Length: 140
Image (cartoon, rainbow, N blue to C red; front, side):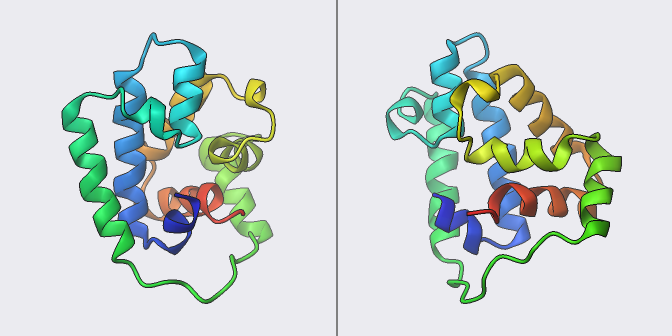
């Protein structure tokens, strides 16, 4: 999944973050491990999602797999991009975005905060949203 998202273009990433937001909403109230499993792309947790979300995810996977493989490394975030993320989502946004998809410590990001951050990203104007998604998915 991380490689698919790294290769994905902006539209495919936006589709994914919308899908992830809906998946988290479907698991709202579930235990922390289920939520964290969604953020960690755990297949066992994903199998417990409603059928409609599984179908959307399957369609997304097909679209993402069709994206051309990127042969360039991830771009470093510039100081200006970091400042835009901070002003759009808050002072800690760059660090929170980086830890959202690949946390080192599972306890460091509770599900409610992760869901709120994802919801905030989906509400950003297009340019800021694409920057935020790059911060999430291009750091591996």
